[in-house]
Image (cartoon, rainbow, N blue to C red):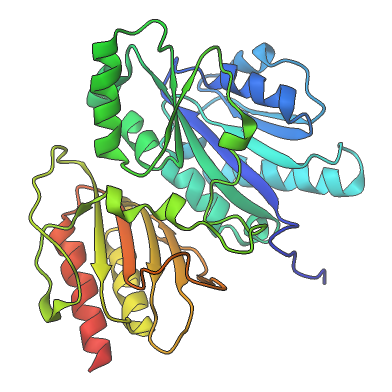
Length: 350
């Protein structure tokens, strides 16, 4: 039996998503010029795929998933494809690619794809989710977000947003779209891309934290202060909350902070309860937890019904010792989540 790979040895996987016509393939072409040893998995909706023919030459392999949406065929297409690529790489049949980019079709819901990458044991033992990058059309993006739920989800789960076609949009369109993106995903940085040009460093190492860093900059992905506080007052004076009206009735982004160290079993019980009964409503969760009895913080990361294995950091990233949770949810009230965490953590500490 082979030994477990260290975090540095895991193959990074970037999920490149975005609604129809938002410029994903153009961005991908640019990235491949600078990251030539990249395996590409493309998904096209329909029986005949064309987008792969628009890709420029790359030293890495290309796998095409056509005939349907990858988010609807997860078990039958994506996982076996990634396994086959990895085995061919290991045997020398394919070049020793250093990373994978999965480009979804424009109407894909990214959550099931993230679930597979994090939850399929064979894949998770050899790969790591390096981040979610979402392209947004500056001209039509606002209308797409209002008309298509998939577009909202693509934005909500992103680690970085790429705003395309800004040269064709008016300043008013860009301002309105940027404000909407901030409502859906307050912590995701927004980069403007023209003709797909983006520094590869801006779209890599976006995941949980960079294992190459001695002191991971948790603040850059947690960024809890950018989220609106949950709309329910918690008991016991542990959490700092306030009542805040939300503009979107489907997707909400909010934060919870706890002043005192939390009982680990209470935290896990609350999150497991949430994921067991409302997995389709929990788009994303990130947390930095001050656990009773531990000197250093524990990082948590969740997608729908999956809770990624916790990681204890070697040190606190700053002087703030509060537990900080950020949630992006769909049709799930912030007050319900706040009460669940409060009830379970307080019950466990009695």
